[in-house]
Image 1 (spheres, rainbow, N blue to C red):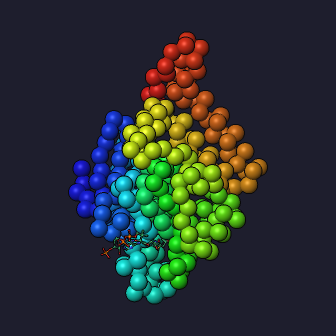
Image 2: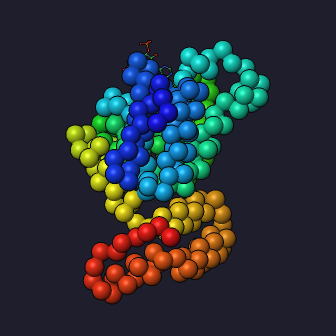
Image 3: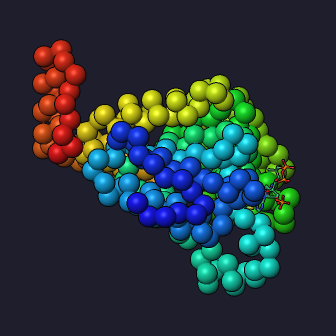
Length: 258
Ligand code: CAA
């Protein structure tokens, strides 16, 4: 496997793990981290042996944001011409379901990275926030758009305008955290959830992710049209025949991913 310097990558069964590993900078997301996370996620995404990806950090920090020291001296034109956060778009576009397993700080770009994932599993130590306003800027990796969709306008505005952090319980109440678990159980729970997903058929998983994305990006009518066609297309897969036969025969389905 490729050598990475800022992340650790491993495979556990059908689950691909990406662990952010810049402990001295609380996993701040610089361009190298972005390049490596995108490369690792893309490799998992093109591997039929992988049915789910987990992205995690350390006990202290999932990620404390984009790397402030890397950005400090840049001009507006530098940010635009270099498309500073553009690489993350590729991460957000992976077909495979992605779980963010968040302990400690998930701030700025860290919160935005979690929101590019499909499920946010939060340790009870997690702290989420978009503190960019305290640096004289605003969220730049999608936070202003994804946070509003996740928690609604008023909670998002409260977080983005004050820069305050919210704890795991508030994040779960607000709909940002899918679930909160004790910190000691976070990684085991992430693996268990990822295994439950990875045991399903890949065509149905990709289809589910595509229609979920559609719900965020289109009108209700367009989203329902998309769902109708994607739903119907799954009836041409072997996995659909297997899944429904297994139900009738009262056994566990053996999905083949086709
Ligand atoms: N970028 C670069 N370095 C960072 C960093 C970041 N986002 N966050 C933390 N670090 C570094 C610190 O500079 C420090 O390094 P040194 O030891 O070399 O000084 C090290 O990580 C440990 O951090 P602290 O000593 O500050 O740790 P703490 O426990 O006292 O505080 C914290 C923790 C509250 C998370 C604090 O580090 C902090 O406020 N970090 C910045 C959070 C932030 O503003 N994030 C948004 C960044 S901008 C952004 O993300 C834009 C976007 O939308 C994409």
